[in-house]
Image (cartoon, rainbow, N blue to C red):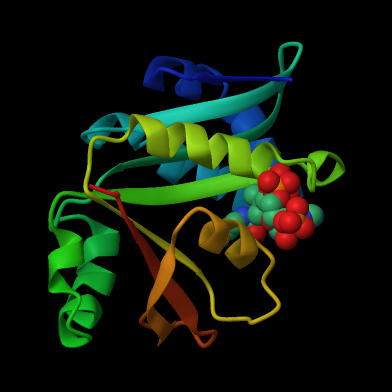
Length: 176
Ligand SMILES: CC(C)(COP(=O)(O)OP(=O)(O)OC[C@H]1O[C@@H](n2cnc3c(N)ncnc32)[C@H](O)[C@@H]1OP(=O)(O)O)[C@@H](O)C(=O)NCCC(=O)NCCS
């Protein structure tokens, strides 16, 4: 198993494969997979500071992680920025990396790949802060991984507009 960086051009070339890992990790529909590929992945070149790492078995992708600079004009910062401010965490939106996705194929989960992918990415981001969104479900196992790597809850019970399930905004501050 190897972990390596993917240039954005390679992300676009491998978009079907990456979207397939996304779909299988979450058990999503083909429609949701295609929407992820055609919007989120296709728009990656528009974002500053994009960083992507993949986990490979031979040349087959089995997991990936990516994110980019947290920029106030983007969709996600507009959603979570006011809630962070309101919770007294405004400083977390300065010098910040927005972690978008971390997924590992079901057959490869529980072997340390998710931890290794995220650790590798965090070792490359120059930012003081990293923010992410996960579910508010206490049984969400991804949170174990995030906590282990130093993430803390910032806005538990966050609600996206029009979404009934609450989310949990978590952040990690780089040790000085
Ligand atoms: C979350 C995810 C990326 C973790 O990847 P992984 O390779 O299984 O992670 P690791 O093997 O490094 O496990 C680290 C910890 O994550 C937890 N974990 C989360 N999901 C797990 C799973 N499905 N199987 C096993 N452990 C899991 C475990 O508690 C584990 O800690 P432990 O080894 O001390 O028990 C992966 O399970 C996944 O793709 N899940 C579905 C998509 C998802 O929820 N992504 C995160 C969105 S916020």
